Length: 312
Image 1: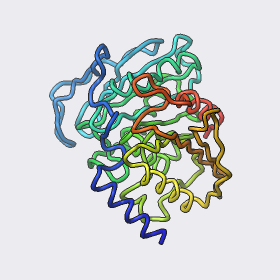
Image 2: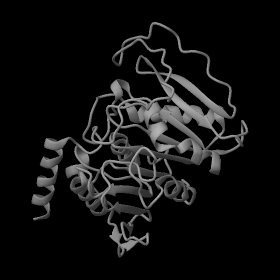
Image 3: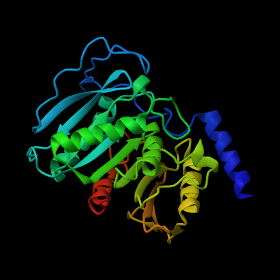
Image 4: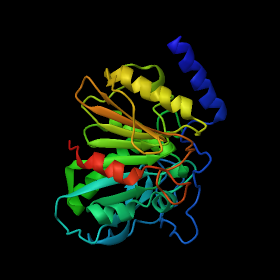
């Protein structure tokens, strides 16, 4: 019966659009006033040489920057924010933020408001752009080597910006959340913890392969809205994660006085934990962002508190 339920959920995902492959509330462009990401690439597919060399890399310093890194015959750009207290060469945490589909780095930067969180807590934030505005995540959507590129991006920031390699984290929205789940499995040697927001461990290898799990412990915190059109598949994906890693969920508890946000923590056989928040009435959204209806939990503060407690 469990497998039948999962097959039904999977069919719903395919017919309604996979969680994270675009959807209500997933902006496709930066809101008015947001800076568009700078690009220098003219290639349109892997293997096609760029016609112009990437600009010189920015010098490490507080503020906003754009990195241009060659990868698979393209020059891929990443928006980078360094907090006012950043000092070049100092060991600094890094949070990589992945946009939805079809969307871009400037949009998720504007809607997540993680720059302000970084300024309060002192970490770097990187917002990479995906080719064709979509990631090669779980069950969706390209054949680009995005896992390889994100490893390369982190390596560059470790070597030139002083990022602490034991404190590298990834979050993402929608299709970016799907990609974050993938990185939890295929990038466990790089990312100390992950935080998928409104995206699921669904589709592709995650659906049927019980061996598809991190080779080393990777803690997860995730957020799901009951009014998200892919709510059922995302909850099912959490169940699959529990099954694959041998996780034992604790008793759900409400974290707000209005009893609209339910938190469940599961301890897993490899020593990691997965904490998921279910928000009553929330759709495809980033909780606490002013770009969406009000929520009883601030995802940014929850995510950073979770990241700050976990190192690789």
